[in-house]
Length: 478
Image (cartoon, rainbow, N blue to C red):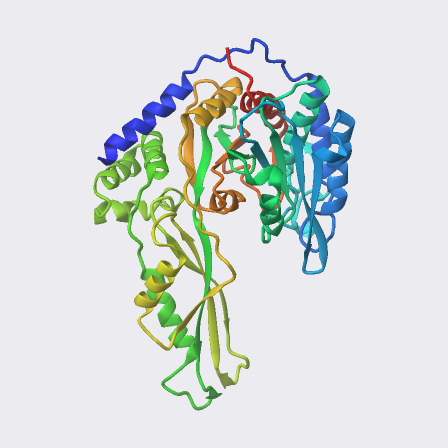
């Protein structure tokens, strides 16, 4: 039965990949428009929109001014202010009004304006000064996610200035704190322009891989993501003088508990999306990985195949929930027995497998010590996988094919987190969209040092988004 499901998914994707694509009636994006989009991205990079710097509203002004110049009005543009720890942050909503007699629901296009802060001393360039080197644009946010902001705003502005009117409302929905809490995302979802959206396309969750010589390898469409959950595992003790060791020791007790966490294995579980991912990886990688994945698709409990895949965490994390210790804190003096020991355990939970409380219970069972406390830190947002719709897949596949023909778009589940989880939880299916091609692992630098984007890939994205927005807006592909 599992292989039958895989076969059906593969047939869907292949059918989408061989769609005939015509540019009849589809205005190409001009070189000047592409240059303007690159210029906009360079204008955005200097804004230090990391938490604590108060720069999101100022960057929003730049975007709003460009949209006003293209013909959008005050009634089309909504700032969504939120006070976060005393800092004024905002989201941004832009409505591209469709025809008044349309009965089609809106579609939202997502990006986020904030970034993870950069440590200037660790960069080869100034992270907040855009710099072009060997065909790459360097700067914080070039990948995550100011490139998406610049592309979507430029596409909306170009279409508006050209007089294009969509059949339905098209909505830009930009968060101001995606990296730190998504409070602006939740406020945006309350607004009437967004809350009734049929679906959303997230520029922060699509894209692909290419070789150093520019050959396209694989492109993804995120349709699900794991749930992020953090637990504080802690032990306590009366302590005492270090010269009089006692049988109980908070650090040793915690160490034993963490060894149990390390040994905890969650079962292999597949859904429609991860089955398709596994088959794609098996076909691309070959060898032991291929054999193990094909075995697990048929027999998820096969221990030999599980042991093989444990050696390839970059692939295996799609098949099971993971929990790993990431931080430690213990003791208060070198000459005192520890009274407290705490570890941060971060878990990434497969959707539809029991949720956060189930994982907490599994941690408790594995540790097997009622004196060890396990408390969830913060709030976790669980969200379902988005259904794989043939109409949406066809549009996104055709968009990829404009620049990268003969590539089949792969629905994927992310192990990290995006705004998609908030939209899916609110009942709005969300899909990672985009065909930004990066050389991996060379260009996988989001949140890290020397973040950069290939300029050629960025400019090609203007053609992608122009096509996708028009198609979503009702324009037919001939």
